[in-house]
Length: 386
Image 1 (spheres, rainbow, N blue to C red):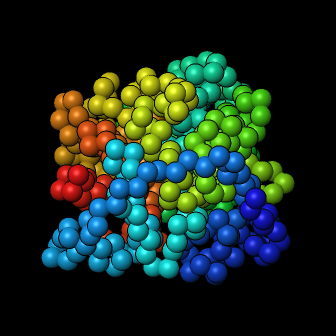
Image 2 (spheres, rainbow, N blue to C red):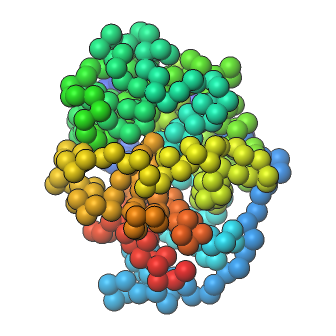
């Protein structure tokens, strides 16, 4: 089990601004792939029975493939990549670590955590703990204002609640409040609705935090124990992981960005989805939940649905008609039937799943590191090598 961090050694004080300034001074106001060292966390225990992928290594697969007149390996190294794994037909065909990282070293996954949160919601619905994705969130969090009655779990999962969220790295911005707040429950009780509910996509970290609060209210156990019981232990995770919490006393689990684990254990989560929720003969997640969360069916996303990001790389990608977003997963439409999908974090943390190629690719890194869109780079790698 990972050693618990003494919060007094992390921050100058327990205040929000104290956290913000302490972290900024230590890290030059930049997020790091090892941010789990800078926040209190709870540990997720590895499984006693480790699952190990078969290995059918294809030598030189990343050396021989060229991008922008350089080998793909050189691109990975120069972009700050720390782990790059390729699993095809349930076998590891390439596993590489760069820039001082090794297999057993944890990486903070950032917003890949959101896809884990979505999965926990899906399992809770499967088991009748939550009645429906169409439930109002105030059914479970009555402390919210009456104006939140029309917001459903589905609105949160699809980033379309209309809740006010301001991006930016100054301490008065919501993006920073959600990251550094020492009391996330109080923060959530004071959020406001700004836009029409269900009208358009606006990426918002309050959404997974609200779902964390909802799970906290509905589960008969802790989120940590639920994650261990339903995913970490059945999948035979080889290494301990951790979940960031707001502070050691409140212990509010940060499902917007707080999971840290190894690349090879993340690949097992990808295998679970690639296998439509089945693992060793047991249906851990409903197949319908996975299809509804990742497929091109029932998109219902009008032409201007992503207008908030017209000048953002996401918006440019969405404007091609190939991008979509459902249940905290990003989708890549290949044609009317085929699709890939992926979970993504801020530093270019990518869990990419291609059902059409029966392939999983993981790229983790200490920075985004390229001018291109990593999902497209990975898609092209798969199309040229698998």
